[in-house]
Image 1 (cartoon, helix red, strand yellow):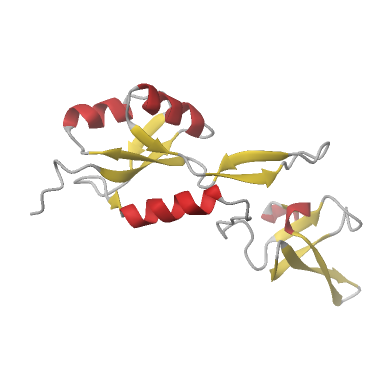
Image 2 (cartoon, one colour):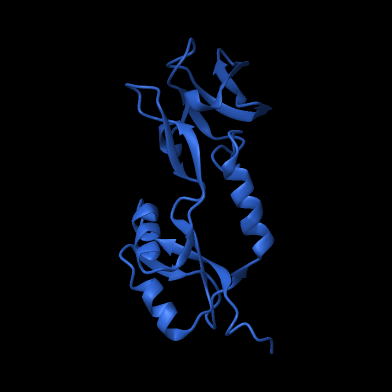
Length: 175
């Protein structure tokens, strides 16, 4: 067995919905090392187009700890914290290199995407731009924030290229 009990390692901490910053601030107040990767995205509100900072992984942040029972208890007692992610036996550590890579990614001004927002076949609606109001099916990423959407009409399909941020995913029952 390795000596991970006394070594401080990074772990994923699951939080309540939209409580990532509250948990991060609580951990820092307790003098615990925490990392909440955030990216800048355009607000999805229809009445304005402003850039906002949001968590890269909604509902999760990283905390560095040695898993001592006292430290573990302090982490999960933090307001908004749910649990450390892992197996039934113990939380699973995240490699230091992964955390360093994430820190580099979020430190740049380049757009970062987690890649799970749109899946092929998702029903979508264009909510901004010249094609606002069009409903269709997501086909694929085009690159640099552009996507292809198919629109079915008269038994045929037409494709249009739009900005990914101009789309909203529709519930499957509406299509």
